[in-house]
Image (cartoon, rainbow, N blue to C red; front, side, top):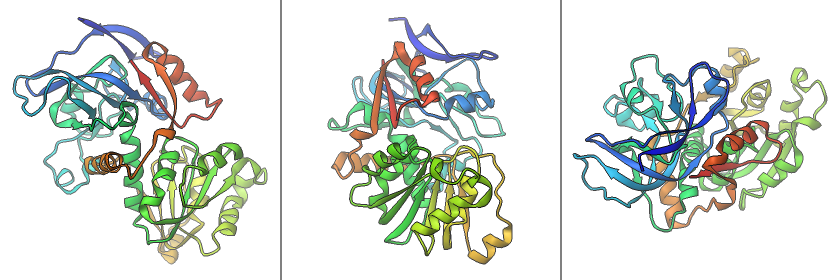
Length: 366
């Protein structure tokens, strides 16, 4: 095979295209993975429209798992046919951040098949910007994680989202037996967070979203952790301006929440949820919300609140998830609600943007 199907974005184009491109050839330090499953990220199209994809045309998709199809001449310890996942974070591997389990803060940080966040030259992204929504993907060999036979490729493709939830919990620095609010709880990251809550000593979850049926369905993912719901569409019509979300959260957690894990992409829910924190509580934000926080600095000072932003997980976070999955301590099969063929990938992306039906995690199977 000399050509393959890939989902591509082009400069100045409004729509993605499915097209034939050459199968990648590995450089000396590369491997080529035959993709068995690739994940879809809800924020992908928004980042594309914002210009965060710094190298176009490109093949999209930062989540992929499959088998090794080709190996570069200088790569050792990897064999054709090995089952692997691709870790998408590109960083320098030598700076202080990369050496202290903070590699998502590297000044060169970018994600193959996805966005580049850095404002400095990103040679790795220039070389490896093509992602996994294709039949094959070429990556540097150090971004490969071996998969146990027991781990399904579809689940392996979504390890990155689960690892993002792990990073959010670590940033929250929770006390044991904590109360945690999860906003945008019915999305990909929200469901991953709910699923992992019991592994971080959470005693109570409060799930915030727009649809009661969907929130109650997500609440069933929390294992032994009881979950309450706050439905934004059931709050007073002027909730955005009168603090009704804060009041409702305070009713459910009178002493305040120990943390808010916030995936809100826009609007006032972030600020109102933060105002429901307990003294010393933390809001961890990974929703890329551009709305201004309504809280004055004195509120953060007096309440000893922390606002922590994190744009991705680390490699160690992903490896922790792999260990949980391999040992059976974590089972996330029920998180994958939709599967599409690569030929239907454009339809799948459109469906994820519309959200006409619940879509927790979606994978593409070439």
